[in-house]
Length: 185
Image 1 (cartoon, helix red, strand yellow):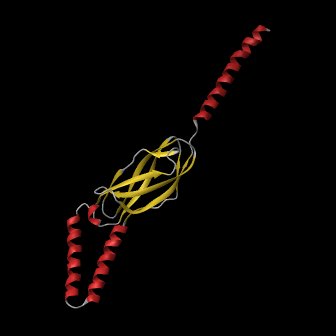
Image 2 (cartoon, one colour; image 1 turned 45 degrees about the vertical axis):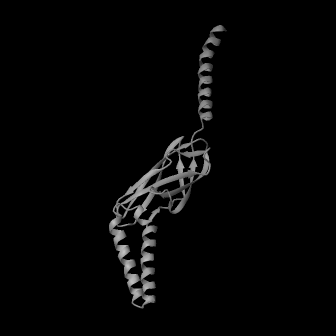
Image 3 (tube, rainbow, N blue to C red; image 1 turned 90 degrees about the vertical axis):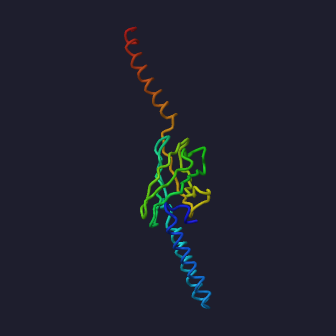
C-alpha cells in the first residue's frame, strides 16, 4: 500500500523486505518472541508511515458567491515525495453545492504540506457538508480517513439583484415622470 504513493518506492520496499527477512531469520533461530517483536516493530513503522499522509482537519469554510475554490491541505509526513494520490470531494447536497473538480492529483515534496484548491459551484445558500478523501491512483482505493467539514454558502441570490434593479428603475421613471406632470399643470 505504501509503495503505491511514493515517488521512489524501491528504497522503502527494499528496507521493509530486509526487515521482514530479519524477523523470519530470528524466528528460525528458535526465538519466536524476538521475531514477533521485530514484526510488530515493522508493522508499527508501516502503519505510522501510511498514517503520516493525511488530510489536515478543518471545520468550516465560507463560500461567498456562486462559484469559488475551497482549499484542502494534504500533509505529507513521509521522507519521500508523494505521488500516486488524488483528492476527491463529495457534497452531501449536490443540488445546493457541487464540486467541479471530481479528482485532483496531489503531489507533495517530502515532509511538506500541500494545499489543493477544489473548484465548487453553489446553487443555494446555507450550510452543506462536504467529505474529502484521498485515493490511490494505481487502484482507486481510499487512503486514510475521510475528512468531513461544512461549507457555508453565502451568495447573493439573483432574485435580490433583480429586485434592487427593478426598484432603481422605478425611481428613475418616477423622477422622469415628475417634470412632465409639473409641465401639464
